[in-house]
Amino acid sequence: MSNFKQRICEVLIAQALATKDQLDPLLAESSKGGQSFGRLLIERGVIPESKLTELLSKELGIPMISLAKYLIEPDVVKLIPERIARQHNLVPLAKFGDRMVVAMSDPLNIFAIDDLKALTQVEVDPVLSPETEVAAAIEQVYTGQAGLTLTAEENKTPADGSGQEEEDIDTAVAILLDESKEEAAPVVRIINLMVIEAMRRHASDIHLESSEHSLRVRYRVDGHLIDSHRLPKSIQSPILTRLKIMSGMDITEWRLPQDGRFKVKLEDREVDFRVSVLPITKGGKVVLRLLDKSNLSIGLDNLGFLPESIEQFKAAVKRPYGMILVTGPTGSGKSTTLYSVLNQLNHPTKNLITIEDPVEYQVEGITQMQVNTEIDLTFANGLRAILRQSPDVVMIGEIRDFETADIAMKASLTGQLVLSTLHTNDAPSAVTRLIDMGVEPFLVASSVNLIEAQRLVRKLCLKCRERFEPAPALLERLELCPSKEATFFKPGGCKTCNDTGYKGRIGIIEVFQVDERVRELIISRGHSWEIKDYAIQSLGMIPLRQDGFRKAQQGVTTLEEVLAVTTAE
Image (cartoon, rainbow, N blue to C red; front, side, top):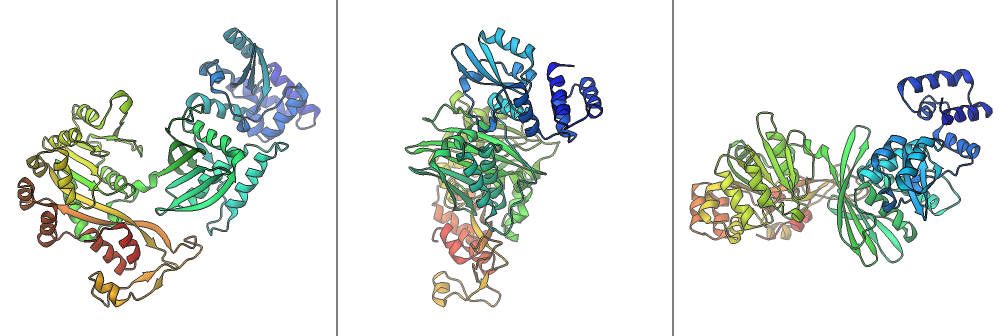
């Protein structure tokens, strides 16, 4: 029996917390199965981990430290290889001259201490930390991909927006500011509560912005930013540093922008977080983008397509080659639409490859590549490599330049279905945009099968929306004829929608098919307005604004929402 196990047993028996008869089977199980004796004590309910660590600290005369509150120096971590840290469950904290402080779950492990002395050529001062905290710290400092696992207890936040989260965050902040308190992991809890609130609100982003006197926390819900908290300036550094560690960033670098990501697991739900850090004059700005994989299962039928538009879109997706373009501004749901297409096409008989900047969703069965300009892995260079992999379907995150457009067009003519995005005001304008990039008109005409433009509008909350009659002058100005079938609503406000009157978003969509006449217009360099007029009059294309008006007449959204995201005809 090791010295550490023996000492644990002596302490527990002396404190009347366990008997020899209770401990002997656990000692045998630990020796036989190789499992940590301390872990067995905790799992079998003999003693809580915090209590065990506290007792051992007093009995051994070794200081106890909470790693959740400690910012580990990255330069010190480099002194101890990851293999040694994992083998002995330890993590270095700091180095002072010829001495190094090391957090250990077993500070009596003389073999580990001897290994460290031989490796670093310095004296080792062990401090005691809970086994789980040491293991978590190892993941953070050596892999940078710690992520979060939120417990059911942490997730007990009311769905009625009663403000319980605010009270919890304020409590965690108070603990963090009170040096006399030893409650576990206030920084971790603050971040956990932010994440939980964001997920409860169905937010797409969390914004943390440094100002002169505070750290501002905001959530983007249904496309609109909502203020949540103003945290004290003094806790800005530990919170932002913790987020950088979780995201795999360099915590010593605050002069340059950085990007990273981590995962959150909540019961059976898994959400990826893409993190962007931007240095600003008052400190740093961090934006966390929530990438909920459940969004990928929405399906094309639930994105907002009108019946006549969805049939055209599905027909284009079924074609074995050609190009489908999705256009719209940033945040208009283009990625969701493309991933919905990929999910529909994802089959063991097909080779699907994507090149993205960055990869937003990790999808099983699809080969995904991320752009890296630092090593000259651009969209164009990556696409050339992809085409040598015999793909059936290629998804390009965005067409930004002539080279990428040219390769993509030619690929679509040689047997691949190519999916990509562009930034244009409407679908027909994508043709002009490609030609302006330098792509030959005949190549555009030959390769493009369909172009879809979209925007996102907020959906009215069904529990509190209120019926109303728009002014006749407004309907006339918008060229909307009063109809008995049309029912307009305005937003109300209730607990379900956090008093906004809106809950969720839906797409307003414009689908532009390319037929022989359109190809003739493209080759002859026809104006975009000429192409658009033909598409509306002859192909039955429903423009973005008209699609939105239909949804407003059905009581799905409001005229104000549609007018806010569409340009005038």
